[in-house]
Every structure is written in structure tokens, then in C-alpha cells.
Image (tube, rainbow, N blue to C red; front, side, top):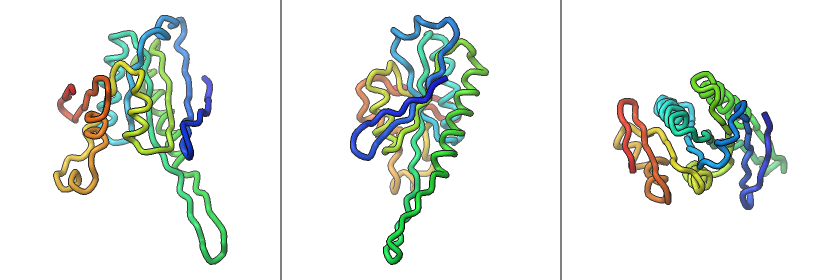
Length: 174
């Protein structure tokens, strides 16, 4: 297990946690399957779907999560407060997702990526070399979709490869 930090442009960085599967060197030449997780029930379903697909296709799995640390500025005292709580929670969520994937498919090569950018941008960047991007459906209410566009819809529109959007009871291939 190894963490690596890679810059992705001004103000953006990725923390990548690599988990090497024992005796699985063939997965290095296969394009990975990228799955976005955020802790919702739809993202858990997307993770389940991606683990099964990666295991069946003998492809590595890359789990992506986005976290934004909170920065508070006090203009009168000229001080700034950095809240790293979201990053710690995000790392715990990623470790739980990797542990869950490992419990279902012990010989699967899994890597976890923590990004500090827009969720759609992070998934598109990680999915550039991927065979498939798997996402949860997200918004269930029509009003929520109007005010806050879905990450899954944005990724499906802009991705160059295949995108699977998994709901609680179905999946759609784009």
C-alpha cells in the first residue's frame, strides 16, 4: 500500500492510494475501470457494479472521490482557518470503499484517488485512460436537477469513452 501526491494544475492535486493485488501483474496492461463514490446509496450500487465488472474483465479498479477542504477567512483579524475535516472524512470513505471492494474480490487490483477539484472534472481526468466510467444516478428529484446539475449527466456528455450510470434498481449505458 502506497500514497502518492500528484499535482494536476494550479490549485488542484490528487492523493492516490495504490493497493497491489498479490500475483496480479497482468492487470497493469489492461485499462482500468473508474468508479466515483460519494457515500450515497447510488454510489454504493455503482461501486458494487464496478467491482463485478472489473473482476469479470480482469481489469484494475480505480475508486475516485472528491473533497474540498474548508478555508475560512476573517477579514478583520487578518487570519485564515483551515479545516481539514472533509479531507480526513474523504480518506476514511475511500479506505472503506477499497476495503469493501477487497472483501468482494480479493485478487482485484484497486487504487483510490482523492481529488480536490470539481467532481465531473475529476472523473473525466481519471477516466481519460479508462475502459469505463461507472457512476451513481444521483438526483432523484426533478427540482434538485434543475438547480444543481447532475455530475453523472455532465460526465456522460463530456466523456470520450463509455459511461455507465447505475441507479438503485437499474443501469444505463451511454
